[in-house]
Length: 396
Image (cartoon, rainbow, N blue to C red; front, side, top):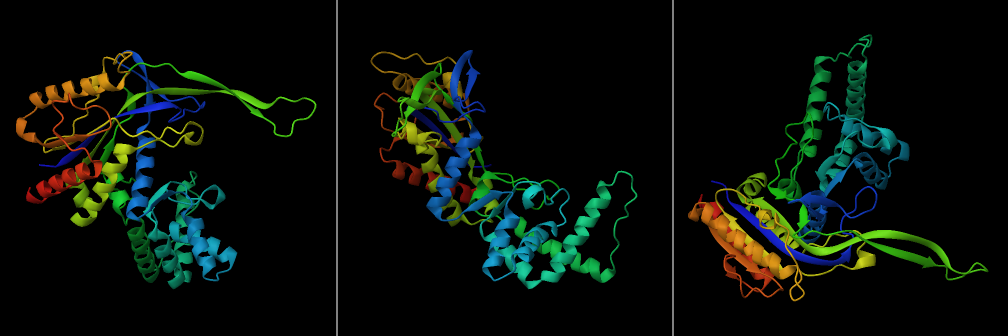
């Protein structure tokens, strides 16, 4: 039995471009036969992750620039710039992970995801075993070159028994650091090909956020006027930017059992993460073009559930697009649709699986029937849901 927390949010945003496609237009999707506004799950997870890391004071780095970060630390320890650059690249290559090498610009060939402290730890390793790291890296590069030689004319280098022991010891140390994790990695997961010890199945799942209703992109013609015009006074630049506005349904879930396991059984750390994550996912505002649209609205409805069967996405409430009214816009009918669908879903599944439910929000929620206990304050709602889920997980 796994314990799941599900997060359902109805959130209206004014004219904005919350998440752009490759042409700069707002992302969209067809759902229920109607065009909807969309923000990607990747966008939501990144914004939430950075906010959570800021809140709990624990950062993870998703980057190809790990070698240069290590080099920067070494330069701060009075290393020669060239030696620091070589050592920063060498310690990553010394992991011996197939496919992990140094590409253009001195960056790693693949994206790595490590706790921030991994940079200092790898720099310490280099500083303590400089010659051994460089030798192991040279060996790994020679092996990679031989394996890439399709003509098979390049023989793989052979090592003595003592050299093999050094390679194995350093590889284990580097891989151990690359496999280390913190709350973000435990929650969002990590995959590094050919390194099973580094791979973590994330405890958090986040859906693409969709409008509850059909919409069309709204073009905004704009000009930029030169403050120091010449004889050709007028616009120095003009263009058109796409925007949308509407009411969105956002959904995410946390496998609390898996989160605690990924964090080595540390329930205090899991609690700290859950409180931060649930709050940030509830009030999330994508950052794209926020300086020119200021879409900083609070959510109309936040609905949390604790389940012991499976996570349940309630987007089916909006498969038929919600219709706006002059009196209520899209928000009120969206909340009504979610409420009705949540009731139908509760009747469909085993009654004992839905352990707890509660809601809060800024809209008129007096007519809500199926969304659990009304807890007006978001922090109190987060506190109660987190405590219930962790107590249940502890008893299982």
